[in-house]
Image 1 (cartoon, rainbow, N blue to C red):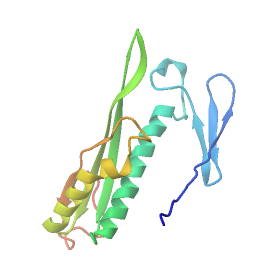
Image 2 (image 1 turned 135 degrees about the vertical axis):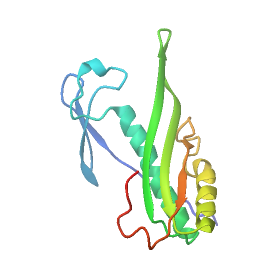
Image 3 (image 1 turned 90 degrees about the horizontal axis):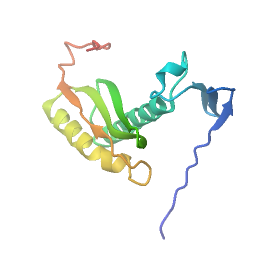
Length: 160
């Protein structure tokens, strides 16, 4: 017999007039939402653009999926930091659309064998973590993986 797992993620959006809103969920603090980045002249002081939330969600999903796979492979991670970027292209005759979504993790581990395993994990991650039924654009993951001598890099690794 096949087991099926269903997980629901529920949010609520409260419009605040003009182009402002607040996104809420029972599990986290509210997030103020503003205009899309393609409309910077609208003024978004202190508010997240929906596109930025999408990029942040993909970046966060990449981290969590990577950590799960690293744990399963018994790879101790010494350092993880990332940046992500999405490119939105618009033309007069078509609506803006995402053309690229790139996550750039920077990871440190203690051996070259662990570094190779991390590279393998990242190579497989997009297909496992972002099925096309969820997002039509498969994120590209461009990791920087380093090996560190644990004794020369104590508890707080330097930020690049």
